[in-house]
Amino acid sequence: MISKEFFKNIDAVAEERDLSREQVIEAFTQGMIAGCKKAHDVRSCRVDIREEKNEILVYTQHLVVSEYNIENDKNYTQILLEDAKQINSRAKVGDVLEAKIDPKDFGLYAVRDFKSRLNETLVTMQKENLYRHFKAFENEMIMARVIDVADDHYRLDIGKDLTTLLPRKESLPKDNFHVGDHIRVYVSSVEMKTKYPKVFVSRIHTSLIIRMLENMIPEIKDGTIEVMGISRDPGDRSKIGVKSNDPKVDPIGACVGEGGSRIREIVKNLSDEKIDLFRWSDNERELIANALQPAEVIAVTRVNPKEKNALAIVPDDQLSLAIGKLGQNVKLAVQACGWSIDIKSETMANGEGILY
Image (cartoon, rainbow, N blue to C red; front, side):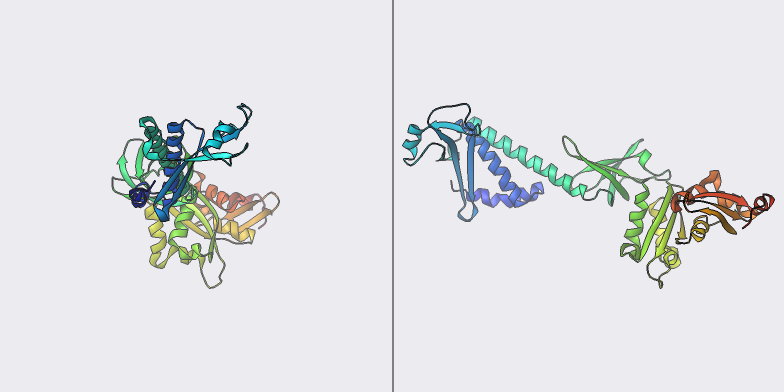
């Protein structure tokens, strides 16, 4: 069958469905096979698309047998040898006999099956393409546009004609988005559902901050600076330990940026969540002291590398700052540096006879 019109429309269908040219041809092939099976009541057909000649060749397929047997290959409709020889005199038992047919002769039901399988295959391919596209962004940060605001969620346009929900419980306490706002979200997982892929997003995930740092601080993206530890009370405060692999680059200064421009942009994107940066150190005492900033630490003693616990001594007037409101500062320090930290004031330590 010659079909110049079909080959002209391939690219249009591919663009409309966001598919490749090869995928459209494959879907058409599957549709043509379904129509052929229905029209000729066979189990197998073959389609040969010759684009260079604008040709679509369709063949029925029969298995040549000496006698009908239900044990024969069930993928093919059987044909007796004597009947097969009337089609091809060289046919022999075991051959798959092909007979060329014209799709223009398809009846109503065959055309229906052709269209149904074609559309079904196109939709399946679209779903699979969407899934692969967003699966590649799993554990990454993406931009999304707010298209609806409800009491318990934001509806987001994440591209490729796909929307998802940002539940309020996955948003930050100070988030107050409006329709049309562009926001950064973290893709926590992507799952294939019955209709379309489901993309789960969050703004409270700790890794969102890491992705923001990578996105907005070139030295982190290229590996000059590494994020060694991070902890977070989403929407309130985060504590991040950084180190530089280049002695000429100050990790804190690079993250803060000139005039605080870099860290200010990150804080803005996190709806004013505070960020504490501290310098990572391979020296346990320095690491623990740095992690407790902004509190001043006089000494770190009783360091137990095996149990990873230690005691920090702070000035009397720094005790509440070191512990933080509701214990937040020490909690975040412990989570960020990976050490269990006990804190005592100078007076408490002296009263207990602790040497430091």
